Length: 231
Ligand SMILES: *Cc1c(COP(=O)(O)O)cnc(C)c1O
Image (cartoon, rainbow, N blue to C red; front, side):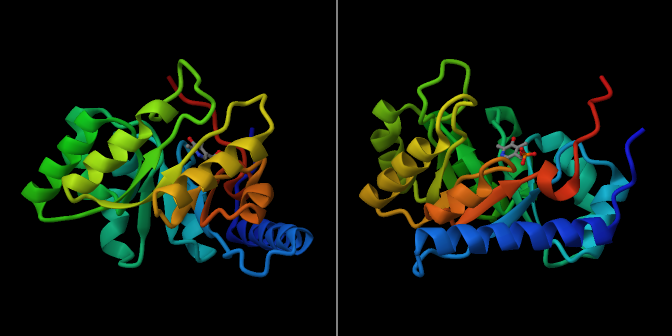
């Protein structure tokens, strides 16, 4: 059985994370490096852990599935008016309406058709989420994200249809040196005049923040190991 996670547990992990970020920034001697926004990745976590996270003061959360996120956050939206929800997982076009309804930031835009659906949903609902483009920096077959070859055309399209494009996101290949991917993402963002960089997870958030991440997506290092999926 896993232990119950308390608000105090989360607060102490939060302290560790902030210390690691400060240390990494010090090593990099990057006084101009922004302190990244911490996105608490709440996917698959128990209700009690979510409550503990809220009690610990966390308000920015990341989820990778629309339906799961709805069941976790729809009701809490009315309790907490200062929540910010990021969609960080792949989005199917038929869930675009639901995604636009629930999320403030959609980080996983990776194809023109999906951008168009988000635009339609956004017009229909009168709600304009910020969007990031997910880049498949490792060129991995199975992975979501636009290829490097198609990035420029996608950025142009997303801008042409007037979505609120703010930045880029990546998930480096498991066995690669993540710093190569973070450096590439930063270079691409700069090239295209985008200011937001979503990169770094539990294993490498300090590295990512020292390389200019404006947000880091931390799950297990903050909220504890995720319970195994029931199905
Ligand atoms: C699950 C997930 C995370 C968090 O993973 P941890 O290793 O638990 O920090 C970050 N980003 C994405 C896209 C995820 O799906």
